[in-house]
Image (tube, rainbow, N blue to C red; front, side, top):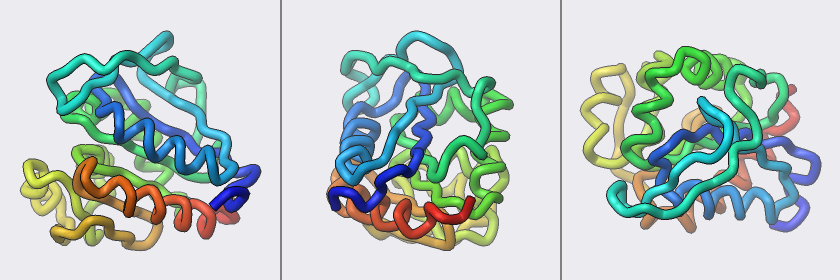
Length: 185
């Protein structure tokens, strides 16, 4: 995988409450494949990470604030999960617009666990085949998605996965998808 994403710029959009492994492991996979990752959030400083939504899991330093970036600045987008993280992003107009514009651009977007909630708020789930953590599948269906129970699903430029248990398959797939979709700019 080394070098597959050389020169590619990957945005990671996350907020307080992000599930640590769902940010850390995909980021490591794309970094090791040569990408440059940027952690974007709705506030500056640091975001608080969680383990299993309930346990404190340290922090991640924020590289950029959502209002200071554009989807044009990046080749791919990663939306990690955790229950609180996507719920906060859904309440931020800049974050919602960023996700919507990114999906509509055709560039690759990947999301795991509760992260696909972002697609509901951005109104980009309709007509898509997606997977997610079981508790948000009804929301995705109600937003017009075809929801399946598979470890990883790619539909067009969107790749989704269910939970931390699926991280090995998810990480491998996003490196593949981010490499294929990187020339969309």
